[in-house]
Amino acid sequence: MVIGAGQMGSGIAQVAAEAGLKVILNDISEEYTNRGLSNISKILSKNVSKGRISEADKEDILSRITTSTSLSDAAGCDMAVEAATENMAIKSKIFADLDANLPPHAILASNTSSLPITELGAVTKRPEQVIGMHFMNPVPVMKLVEIIRGLATSDEVYETVHTLAERMGKVGVLVNDFPGFVSNRVLLPMINEAIYCVYEGVATPEAIDEVMKLGMNHPMGPLTLADFIGLDTCLAIMEVLHEGLGDDKYRPCPLLRKYVKAGWLGKKTGRGFYVYD
Ligand code: CAA
Image 1: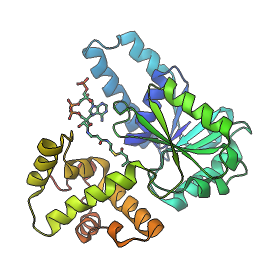
Image 2: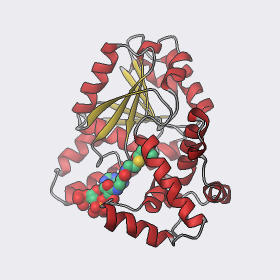
Image 3: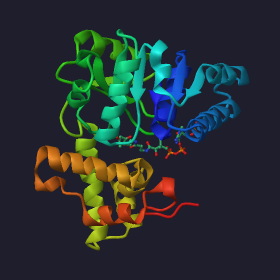
């Protein structure tokens, strides 16, 4: 089961189904699960039109994905990957509910981008079966899965998840449970600094992105990437780094806070550092 049918959850469900696994895509409403399924279908159709897969492959992949709005449907699952919003209270509740519904052998993974896996493990009765499986956006394209071991995660569960990531066409990299892990501890301070450059009038968003694209060969500039990740998610990660590591260098830029308060969350709301149609 994949919990959360947003851009990350639907991507995870897609790559799992492409790997031949049966997937239940779960969210709190049918509107969300249908939207997730429709996004998967669109990406698969594009792959058909590009000749990468056949129409029959597409139907086959889609036939392995069912939807659900109740965590009690996890009763027959071997594994759950939670990709809900970056909020500890929400994730803890989902983990406790999953623990009550999943069979005893099942693994509970979180796609959290920065929240503590050890703490999520502690709300369950099976902390040795709790692990971080952090996919990158867009999931169907990016090769990395950060695999985060909580304090109690067993070797066997780590090996199983590493093998699963490979089966999904990804490369799993082991990381220990520290705020922001590796990916976001390195990436987000760069994005935050780019936002400070806008805030202090060092350059326009376009100029900052151009510098990083042409000067450092980044596929997207940091502000385009921030809009793509979601500014609310960026802020949530900076808060975790700031609180967890304590250093002032992780302080979220006031402009990032202001944008989030304005509801300018990036591409998903049509406006962030850029305006989208
Ligand atoms: N879903 C599926 N496929 C997608 C996609 C999506 N959302 N977005 C792009 N693609 C595919 C395109 O279809 C295209 O495939 P084809 O080659 O078959 O046409 C391919 O990716 C390349 O796309 P484009 O040609 O449109 O554009 P591009 O060359 O700029 O590549 C990109 C797009 C792969 C997203 C690239 O810009 C990139 O690598 N950007 C950086 C992404 C990144 O840093 N991700 C990590 C974010 S941080 C994170 O996820 C962690 C976190 O916790 C916050």
